[in-house]
Length: 116
Length: 118
Image (cartoon, rainbow over all chains, first blue to last red; front, side, top):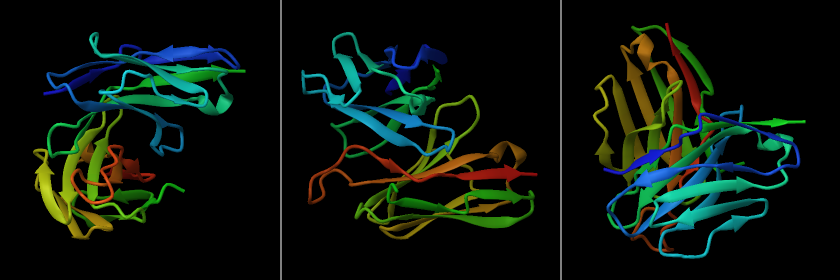
């Protein structure tokens, strides 16, 4: 079974600075997807970024980028020019691309605080 | 607007009550999911429906009864719940692998129903 681990329960960053959230996962599969979701106080789960395991290039979405290290099974999220609206719980998630199922496995989450 | 709506947003019920949670997706997806989010715990997948057929039941107690009448609607019927069932219940949808239009691997979530069992 796949597992996802986020070792940082809480992180904080100054507005306009850069912060990196860590995620590691365990799988025996070679084809899969990784995601970062954001859950602000409204509790709405919002997709931030997606990475396909077969792609070597790291995904980027505006101020959000990932550092995907497949051999190390590491998938960190970098937030540049942090804004107050980035404050939220961030979840890393894994989904197999090899099976017919579509189960998402989530990490425990990292609570990000942005200080003005 | 994410295209996935849930009602009600908040629900307080006694242990002997029967209530239902509703989820509707407007994204043309064919897979729908129920998750439970408790404090200090990762999201727990409860049920998966693909084309109205239940494809996964993650050992959920029978006091939770899902229903998927079509690909756009998903219900979670609740009866004789326990206080430990108090949580945020999230619905999500996606396009299931192998279907036409290509599979989008990500799931889109509704805003959730905050359930309190007294």
